Length: 461
Image (tube, rainbow, N blue to C red; front, side, top):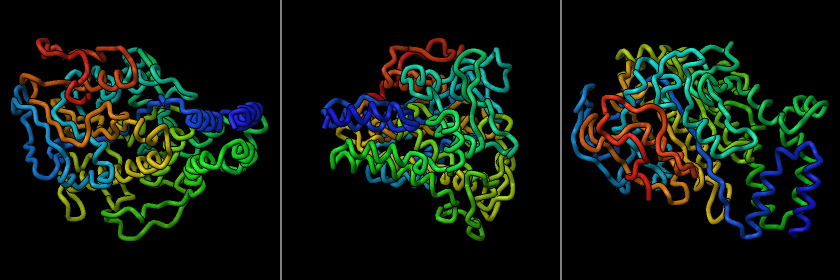
């Protein structure tokens, strides 16, 4: 079969679908030959408007709101197993993967400055806010993309509150003065990512057919002939992901715990004006880009950045924007904390969908999810008017057992002995990716006596 597979790859190399199918077939070939799977992937889901740390604690853990000042919390390090504990309401959708989950509280990012958004500072551990191009610095997603290069080194997808924004440059940067794009229109993202399999007239054919499976049907048949029965079954798991792209109707009415009075009219979520539809579509596209090997680093922005932070999630039955809730306003019988929880839960519904898709694809002795780390955070750190004294994060995945998981950890308060920063978290991710870097971003001058280099040893096996 190996010779047949090689012939298959050679044939694909001359076809329109080479860019698209080659990584998939190569992965199956390596698996059949008993070669180790070394793929590593990182996904950042960045939501606007802050995350209250006390809303991230699991059942049985009382997490009081900390004062926004030095020595602002206990001097102890908390490490609690999630086994037998109910997750907070907003995180419940990912309960099935609790054994691969780490909730991290207590990290600071004071160097970023704070405000409605820290923009590139959130992923850069550098001064944030709106900066001119020359002032923007490398962000962690770009640093990982350089360590784990792919066909697309980095893919940025997201939504903006303004429908006219095709692309924004709000949270990611390749390096100094080099902002990375976040594509905000799903249909444009679809054509950019999957239209890459075609050039010239073939590209026009792709756009006309508007479905990657239809466009690649001949290549798929060719690839399947070169695979054994078991490999063909695995190949089918990849193709199921692209069937998701065929079903472009809104599934919002299947999401529980929203207050939308009526289920949405079925619409093309790739062109929908409803922000939840568009975000749903971007998660579909991101999953497909990872599964077919187009990229190893994905950033999904949920209206992150100063220009979009006050987006209104009308698709969840809400009429006011996030600015209203940030100032303590409630809606539909909920306090502002209840609204925060509901919106965040929708994001974790989408993250759960991503986990499910990655977990369905075999890779080595496990699945793609085993070799993927998903990091959820807000560009606004801990509050609507953030000061970055603490920066809650949720980490999904254990990178093949290299990350300790199934736990809630909370670092000592700012300037307390043992306190760490988001820069330490980003070094942790870099070292998981195989980088030898021991520092990232800029050090907090107020913590000059603290170790702001190296990884978070508490997270590593």
